[in-house]
Length: 156
Image 1 (cartoon, one colour):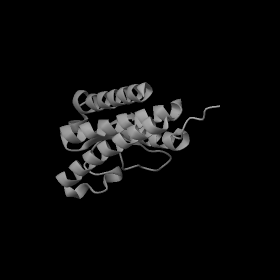
Image 2 (cartoon, one colour):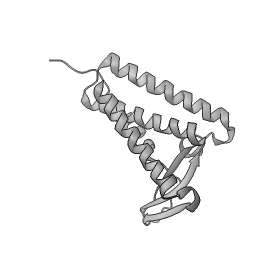
Image 3 (tube, helix red, strand yellow):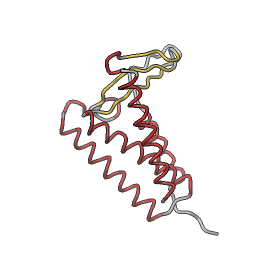
Image 4 (cartoon, rainbow, N blue to C red):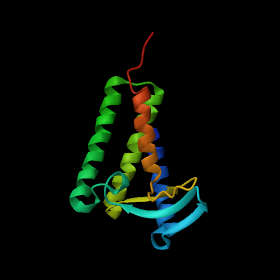
């Protein structure tokens, strides 16, 4: 469980530090966008009040509190699952990064009322209109890792 804690801690810290840098130091909330490695990587400020791609964003505080509670319940369920099933090290690491990312987005919703998304990637003539953040990446990677390595450890 120590691996889950530390993976979650460092993931949460990286997510919140990147958001602080982008929102407050680079002032992307006012500037709006910055090209980093055009067209592949750009910073585009987007405040997501819903779930992925802004789904359910039109319901205000109801959606905000529902998503906060949902993220906390899922994080607790993942913790309970890894405690009960004791997956291998990659499973524990996956659980930690998923939980750290989920809690990073919870903090955004509590502080700003929305999740701070800012990474935008496009390629090969496709102009991606959506933005995401470090927490979104780690939630995806953690969930995928739990699918691959989340089962019980096999003891010889």
